[in-house]
Image (cartoon, rainbow, N blue to C red; front, side, top):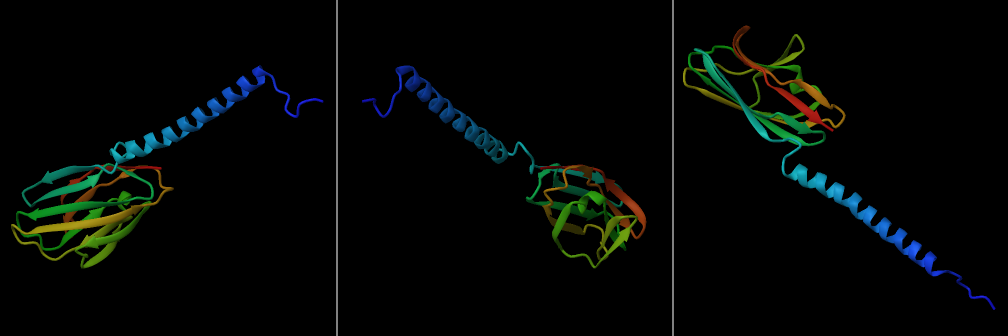
Length: 174
């Protein structure tokens, strides 16, 4: 009578090795994903905020925004404008990168009006007197399929006269 299981010691050792190798392969695979998640939590892949500033005799402007964002996530940019002289018709002109591949969730305070100027968004606000501070919060969600680098510039105009401009860029990761 033959035994139901006929295996040699070599077969058992080989089977045990394959199971061990498979176990370590699975652990390594999971470890790679854990490492990616840990690096993302440590802000290696973006969402960190940077500041850009410009100043002229008419006004000071400061932009606080991330340089790198990840697809599918929410982020905020903050624009601060301090008038040094009266700006009768303040217009905030945003480069295409502000809305291309982005979902605009909110702009606070809301502009009095919005318009288009050569493919750029123009936000109109009420007159700024010397010393006035206009602080604007802009919240976005990044479209996951809009990977790449784009202009994230902003300018302050009085009607159609440019007073100052910031020219940062933003990079969208998958």
